[in-house]
Image 1 (tube, helix red, strand yellow):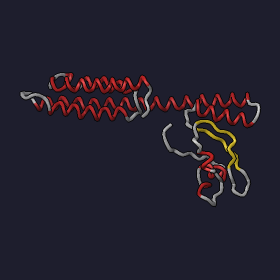
Image 2 (cartoon, helix red, strand yellow):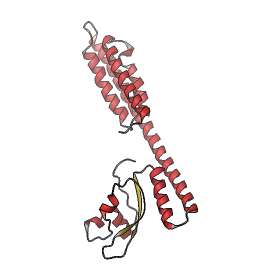
Image 3 (tube, helix red, strand yellow):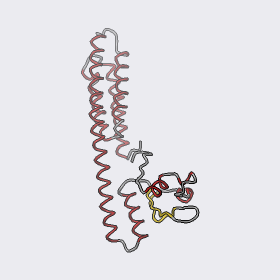
Image 4 (tube, one colour):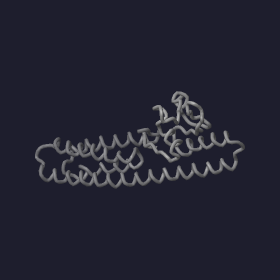
Length: 213
């Protein structure tokens, strides 16, 4: 999980609040603050991480709440304290579900906005293009910068003996991948049976879900 500078500070704030509340939790085994203050870092998690992050926080806070119960001083009505803490844990998990659902909607909306922006800029590049090579490289650049992908490339199928794929445009961080891969569209060898070879041979789109965008 990669975090920006502000998100790192927020993550530290969440950790600090949770740790401070745990210390208070031990001292006030029957008070409302036993668990309700854990909602503050959970709400802050809206700005940090992926949709799974609220669930991780809810799990951590559930452990802290139960630990606070076990470490509470003697003379406390244990049954009443446990009921209060279980209510708090249930509320935390409900909040985590709601926050996670919200983050999923936001991420989907963000991906859609990026795709539309990339499509718009590609159309503008098509209008401004002076030659094919410049157009293909510009489209690859737009997909990387506006679409949010690490690398984008365009290749043309060659009708040579190796059935090779000629790189016509590229942008982003390929780290020598394209040169080392020696991509082919021949079905007779393994390097030709990948997504590129399938697309060229069948004329159909192939989507690989390798990692989240």
